[in-house]
Amino acid sequence: MWIRTLLVALFAVAFVPAACRSPVDRVFALPLDHPPTEADWESAVPLRAQARGGRTTRADETSVDADAVHKATASCHHGTQAPPVDLEVRAFYTTERMYLRLTWSDPTLHRGPGWIWNGSSWRRGPIGQDGVAVLWGGGVEGFACAKACHLADFRMAGPRAFADYQMATPEGWGRLDLWEWKAGWGSLDGAADDLFLGPGGREPDVPGERFVENLVRDAGGPMEAPAPEPGAQAPAFVDRAPPSGRTEVEATGRWTAGRWSVTFSRALRGTDPGDVVLEPGDVYPVGIALLDGVNEDHNAVAEPVRIWLVPRQGPDSETREARFGSE
Image (tube, one colour):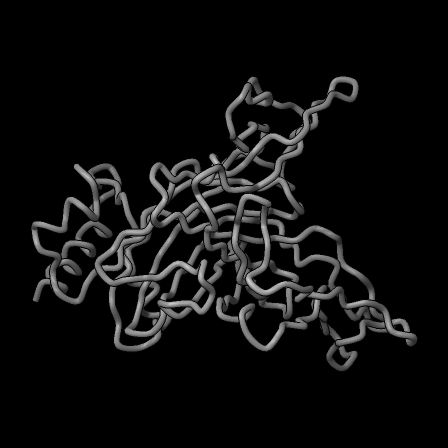
């Protein structure tokens, strides 16, 4: 009954006129007894946010604002002229798995240096890739993705400013679970990798190369490709995943009408000691970063996105404040 009441309230929020609507301040991950269907995703009320601060392939971004030199603070939001990227976040979970869908605007499709059959031969695509990363900050007091982004180098070349950044956890944070998806990994739907962010930077849960560039064969085409027929495409990177530890996080992407929709899933409990353990009833802050045809310089949501795994029975009054903080 409690879940039904919450669903009614959420649908009411969804259909109130925009001028009267109160903002949703967290993602409601509702419990299901089956993997979410497209109908489930379409009915879910999204949390809407904007990612900004990096580069895209859609604007002249030669200028850098006054926050380019971060003084002594850790921040990767160095402020270009790129427009913000609209983002929607939805989530569900079952007794076994978590499902997280991120949808964002991106009119320029980049699957990396993949392959296209032009009717007579295979040709490489452009280098840039679209992608998304989710950094789980559960258990870290004051977690914010920006605190893990450090200015590594800053230099001038004529009128232009260049800044290099390194992602690494600050002292006291330890290892944080990191899920990453790129459009050119593994297939034309992209693929995910199971990583962590630690004091030394971004590392895989299990060492070794997973996604290997789909290089040229002797015959002039990619080493892995479908039959050369009109419209045929081959991914930029093929998957050489080890048997365990790097395939727990699954993700597929779909690009339609200028929007990416990427759906992650993973067991509620991963096998790596650093994997976030997802418990019904708890709230998890996450940092979200988007790549738009560039390799490193991401756009990020400034504040953590909170994902609440709505329990199958209502939370009692004693635990509510502990889960949400004072509101």
